[in-house]
Amino acid sequence: MLIGAHESVAGGLERAFGLAAEDGCEAIQVFTKNANQWREPALTSEQCEAFRKARKSSSLAAAPILSHDSYLINLCTADQDLKIRSRESLLAEALRCEALGIEYVVLHPGAHMGAGVDAGVEAAAEILTWVLDQTRGAQVALLIENTAGQGSSIGSRFEEVAAIVAGVEKAAGSAGKARIGVCLDTCHAFAAGYDLSNEHGFDLAWKQFDDVIGLERLKAMHLNDSKKGLGCRVDRHERIGLGELGTYAFWRLVNDPALAHVVGVLETPPVEKDRAYKPQLLQLAGLRGAPAPAVRPASTAAPTATSSAKPAPKAAGRSSGKAAGKSAQNLVATSRPKPRAGR
Image 1 (spheres, rainbow, N blue to C red):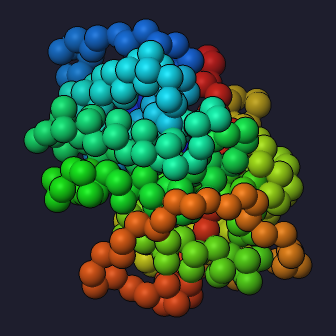
Image 2 (image 1 turned 180 degrees about the vertical axis):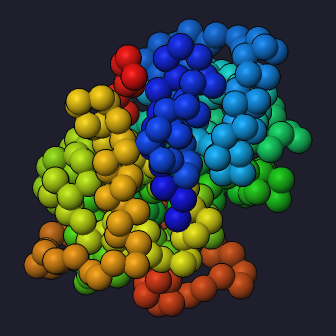
């Protein structure tokens, strides 16, 4: 796994590469705009060139880059105005990323707001298919992020994520299938009831992920510990090893050869002294090849909530859930990354 962090773009998008070098990142995630505003700033050719040039001269030249889309979009809504606004915002993000050469857009599916899970899943698949169609021929891919399960949000259950993926793949065909994937957040998974904190829970969750979604669809991970306990349905990130999830899951993830292609980024609170991620990245790197850390007792808590959404169809030729269960493992939280100031 390539490990990195969500880096600030304050002062210019290209500045993220300098911060990434200071932190020792092998991969990065960025915002291409203010994630808490609807405003869609147009990128100039000079901005795009500066970003591409900075990337080319950095140690991340060959590493995939993630962009996190706006927190305001809701792909699962039945509200027509919000639906149109959300799809236009996602399209604008995809076009910005294509212009910058960013490989992946990570997005939260949204909330059905009373319309029901099935209606929300269908709405999300429809918008994602539309965006892929509007960007036909582009390289940028869309990654659906699992959620913690707060309110009526969709995506806390693997079945819900899989159903959105299946809807897109069915409607968009082979071209669309190549540009849709999944980003797994460890904090969110843990908050949703997937116990990644110990061997038994991790193996079970990972097998469920492979059986329901498919390991081949996993392109990125958000590596976050959780401030709250298993099944809390609350999205609160914590630094690695300081939360309720603990270190075991991250040891499994960074040592799994099946995840060598996956990008894993921190969205945890940076160290306050200089707003840096370097200490946490060194901690993750130190888990590579290290003995297993102490494991917590297995929990009896089960993933909360059920869904009528159906799993995505399995791709031919991929490893069985049993085999995957021995190789890597599952999910956990996401709280929003906090931009760094003044480094």
